[in-house]
Every structure is written in structure tokens, then in C-alpha cells.
Amino acid sequence: MNKLRRILLVGASLGALRGGPAVRAQTTLRLMPGAAVQAGQKIYVAGSFNAWNPAAPGFVLAPRPDGSYQLTLPATVRGPQEFKFTRGSWDTGETDASWQPVPNRQADFGTGTLTLQVAAWQDQRPGGAPPLAAQPHSATPNVRILADSFRLPQLGGRKRRIWLYLPPGYDASQCRYPVLYLHDGQNIFDRATAYAGEWGVDETLNALLASKEDATGCLVVAIDNGGERRLDEYSPWQNERLKKGGEGRQYVEFLVETLKPYIDQHYRTRPDAAHTAIMGSSMGGLISFYAGMKYPQVFGRVGVFSPAFWFAKDAVLRQVRQQRAVPVASKFYFLAGPAEGPTMVPNMAEVRDALLRRGVPASHVSFKTPADGQHAEWFWRREFGPAYQWLLTK
Image (cartoon, rainbow, N blue to C red):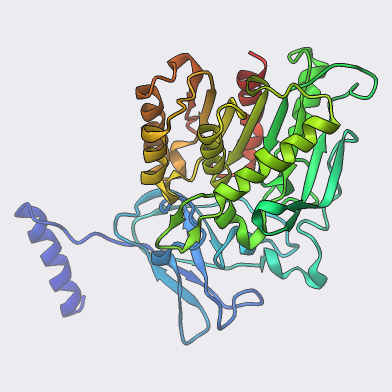
């Protein structure tokens, strides 16, 4: 044992004996060089320890002379954690060698060095092929593309793909149906377009109808995210550290002023707030909550999955406290897993409690925190059915 190591160990022991702070072991992540990991990149780690922020300033890996990248995590990051590597956004997240999504990495942090590799990045598929191009399409026949380039006039004329799910029997009936609006449309119906797995909303809704657990069914409108503009469009407030966000108001105005009127005009909907739901996960959960608060007369049913309240928590709470039209008739379904990060469930609980203090009835708020919940599509897929039933069929 060399002299410096003895000094560190003795110092840690004396600190503990005297009641002072002991030296805490830390975990170092090292990414080895390869086809995907090359010089000149900016690589981040996102996980349960930083609210799954794909570009957290304090979690960027530093390049090393041998071509590897390395980050020593804060001493507070300890115990079982889940994580993935990105290059600054989920559109540039890691994949396997075939550009397919990979499950969350898992490790027990606290000491030592984890030597890891990234096989490929999502945005570097050869020939610009769409995500999961090697996967067969999985959307059911009652899913269609409403438009490949639907115009968003509130956002300067940007264009976006819009998906539409019609319940079985829609064409043969004269019924009117509730409508559910979903964000991150790439991930909702089809694994051939998904960048992190699909929700399987169409299969779930078809199964509920077939089993008679859902008597009527509903329409689903899914809007693709804007790629690199996702963080901007999914928050009306800017995150000062990331310099992202701030276009969520215009995005929701597009939903309220342009897309919903189009859907109500061209399809047999039940357009009232009690039969209009909005739902999303992560940043999609944040913007869904904002929309439900801002326009309770439009979106009376709100699904908030693994919400990224960390992005603008003070602004979210301020909206709840100051909103003039308290959504007392609305229903809110909150969902997250405790393993998604130390602030995920507490932040969600704080927002729920703020709603209750404003007079939203407790019977109108569902708060679910399954122990095995993860920040992942498989979790949101599994929990979609119960959320949908509670919001729109009960």
C-alpha cells in the first residue's frame, strides 16, 4: 500500500470516528473507443440519477488520450441505477449494432470503474434509414397516416406526421367516439418507426374492445415529435441550464386551434372535454399536464406518465397555484416508478398535492407508482390500458 493511499484511508476512518464526513467512494464510467465512439463527440449519460435528462451539463463524459471517454459520477449517485448514453438528445441515443433499441443499462453504483461500449447511435443509421428499419411494421390495419406533413401554423409552418387510430367497426357505425391525443407519435403504434420501442396502443385498444372491457372504443391521434425541437415544443417554459423549451404554448395552441377542430370536423367525435384526453410520457407528460391545466375546457382527461417536471418544476407549480380556471371537473392520471430517479415521484407528488389544494377532487386524481416502473416504453405500454380505462371509460 503506497503512502498516499494509506493517508486517504486513515483520513476517511478518522473522519468517520470523529463524526465528520468520510470519504465516499465514487463510480467511474468509461466508454471504450470503437466504431460508434470516436474523437470529437460530446457524450452524455442519462439515467435515474439525473431525471433522464439526455443532455445534463454535469453528466458529459470527457475524452481521454486513448480515445475512450470517462466520467466520475458524483458521490451522491449510489446504489442500483438505470442509465443510457446519448449524444445530447434521445434522437441520438445508443442502440445495438443493428440500430435497434437497447434496454436500460443497470448497475449498482458506489465504487470502481465500469468499462462499457456503445455499438451504434440512433441517428447514424446507414443511408438515413428510419429508426428500427430492420423491424417489420407492427401497426394494426385500423391505424393510418392522417398526414405525412400536417402544417403547424402556430410554429411558423413546421410540418409533422400525424397518425390516426379508428376503432374496429368505425366505418360501419354511426357512433361518436372519445378522442385521445398522444405525443411522440413515432413510438405509439409501430415498432418500425419507434426509436425506443412502441406503446402498442392499437393492440391494447383492440383487445379491450374484443373482451368487452371497453364498450365503445375511441379515436387516437398521435403527433410525431419534432426531433431536435422536442424539448422546445414540449415545454412552454425554458430550462435555463439547457437553454431549451419555450415553444410549448404554441405547440398546444396548434392542438387546440388547428388539429382538434380538424379532427372534430372530419370524424365522428364527442368533442366535449369529458371525452377528450391528452397523454404523454417524460417531456410528453409535462406538456400534457400543461395542456390540461391551460385548456381544461378542451382536455378534460389528462395522462401524465413519468413526467419531466424537473425541467420546469417551479413554473409547473406556479401554473397550478395561479391558474384562474381550476380544472375541478378534469381527471388526472399520474404514473411513474420510484427507480426513475430520486426526484421523479416526489416531484409528481408535489404537483398532485398542489392540484388537491386548488380544489380538484381526490376522486379525480389517480397516482400510481409501481415498484418495477422504469423510464421506458415497455412500462408505459403495460400501464396504458389501465390509464385509458380510468380516464375515458369510468
